[in-house]
Length: 425
Ligand SMILES: [Fe+2]
Image (tube, rainbow, N blue to C red):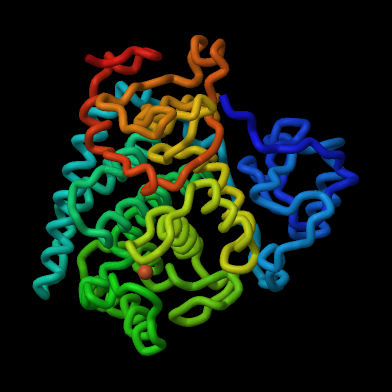
């Protein structure tokens, strides 16, 4: 088994640029994001002194003691923007359904959502207004499903039902936004508005050529301006659509605005960006980092969360980033990880109290060879804990070439395969 590449040092030896991977106390007792972070500010050093005696640093993700700082470690200081903290209620919802008992229901609800939203997108592509009558009840079911057990829809959002990046991206955005909204305790009406807003946030892209959207390499200024028009195009498409909530419309209008005023269409900042738009912008960015179009490099979940953490108080309100990191966890459903046995696995679901020890499907052996039949392990089980099997690190998703549909059919929908270590025939 591999050892973690982490070094224990006293907090007195810490300096900016180091990546803090572990503390000498539980993360939940501190204000720090539990996936670890790079020290970039004096305030973080002060807090580390306040909370810890020693920590573990990861020298692959930050500088080592005595090593010169990398320029990328320091970026522009956060801007001062008026933005009040929003109220949160972490206790509003609790997990009401077990993943393996609920997945069949969620699977059906997800298929129906796919059908209704694809039909609405197709109507827009041929120049019609979308008919939301079939979409609304499905969006309501999605809200209920994410409230009952957020892992189910997050897992399902990785399945390849339609070969269309924009569509998949919209569904993932919607699920991620619901997870965040659920975590902070927004009421069900607001969750519904946010879900619908995210599903249609990029509907304007249906009026932009696929050649431009999927272009290799960078964009010219003219091309960027054309792509930015998807916001106005989306507002035009959805204007007058019956019962499309105002809050959902605001999401289309503001999902590219950024906390520091650097976004578009209006260059709004801080409080002037409605909470739904802030949430949509954050999850849009996270999903674009973890599921990039083909011309962008792939990033693991952990690095995407690092990236968002660095954008705190610049592109995104710090409180919102912190809540998102807590909501999604270090190893969200669908993410790819390396076990300390050297095997590669895909995260399926979590027990709410043991989120660092999820149920995983092993897809590659220690030599990197694909298993003919994925194998499910419950890392929270006594047997896995006795054998000290745990997650060593998060991996970029596409690098592992994951066949989610196969795992879904062969493992997830078969309850018998949920027993720890049971190999299916
Ligand atoms: Fe967009």
